[in-house]
Length: 355
Image 1 (cartoon, rainbow, N blue to C red):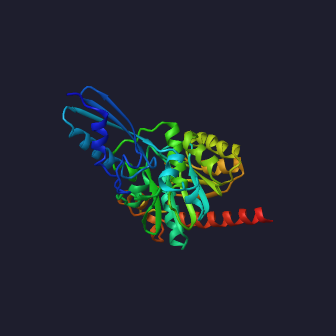
Image 2 (image 1 turned 180 degrees about the vertical axis):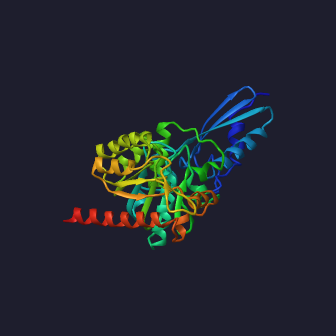
Image 3 (image 1 turned 90 degrees about the horizontal axis):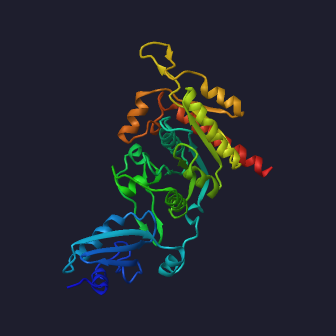
């Protein structure tokens, strides 16, 4: 007996969207059913690209269709509803930048290459600002290497409602990352267009609420994600992170060029892994060379915002999910200096625009 489309649809009527508690069929989320003998392929349109319950929906669909006599294999393809489809479902689609309405200042943290500690700077800057009493959020825009959840010790998955995601929160910092959506260890194989779409949804379709600062941790390089952020929202400033060696500094030039080309203000440069203090002695070791960040800052007429040493406490804080800047100490002092300088520069730029 051949499997029919009607059988598949009837089976899917028993599958509810976990958030809306209504049948996928009634919600219009079943976009296509393909049948090839005993094999069935179902296409489901999620309400948002970063739906935190997509794996549950996928498994529920497989389980329901597998109960049909004669079905041997079920595959599920997940897509995303269009704005018009969401509007029909929810009544009124949230505006593209709905979630950003209460965000005062967006600060992007960028680097020309990977491995320079950009995420470490991002999460500790956010922690230092939070300790200073500011309302802070951090968006992990590195879709292929989302480390922020690990550095904040966050393992939960976010919830959503009516086309909006709710950020997770820890240490007074609101956070959103693909790492919390996909699950730890799950590879995120997204091409450029989907990366762009996800970043736009993370910016506009996340209920950030009232924030003084939203720190956006960009992926390294000058590809899709930095360009999307640069051209989608009004960034108050970019922080460029580098290390002292020449190979890192050559990539910084490209990163600086990207933001200058898009007329986005660069607040300054942070030189990470700047030096190593020799235990028990006054001297320091320049493991990756010295003066590179200062040289680059002079070349572009930018301030050198901070020189952050190689410090075991910083590394340990990231590994244990408790940023070192949650407490003021010798190890965290460069991050507090960075936070104070960022606040002053943002305020100075604001006054300059108003003058």
